[in-house]
Image (cartoon, rainbow over all chains, first blue to last red; front, side, top):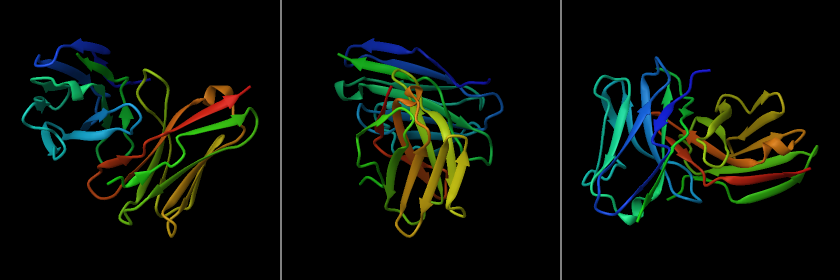
Length: 113
Length: 111
């Protein structure tokens, strides 16, 4: 069964350092999402791509976060510099074109010390 | 402001009985709803969905009910099994495909 891949699964970093997360969506899925989930809360959308274009990044803290999906396939989310409050689970999801159901990867758990 | 709310953070049910998880939303423009199940250290897994043109959708042991006038949906699991123990999130979307998630309900099914 096709799955969304994410790496790394866990990341520990010190504040002010740069971190990057990678996501490979299910093959053929045109839409890719990055979510942040803080413990005890539901996932919150950071950025949504349709193919290589950003559709929605209104909740992305653009002073320190960036995301790209250059070839419309895999994607990278970067944080620079990381802050203590960035500690969370970062989830990637994908969905087929014109369909709404999103399929999630296992997530990257980030701890900023 | 939380547009999707799950007011019960936890629920315990005896194996074989029915589990009912509830979700309320505030935005009347939401027209598509999903339930996800999440185990620790894993991403959410899609369970079942319902569009606003229906009031019920069933898939095996899982049934989702939608009450548009009350802006309320619920997930019924019958019979509940120990493997159902997980955190359940409801999510809703309107135009634009952005989903809003609830805060989750942790279900424990007691053997």
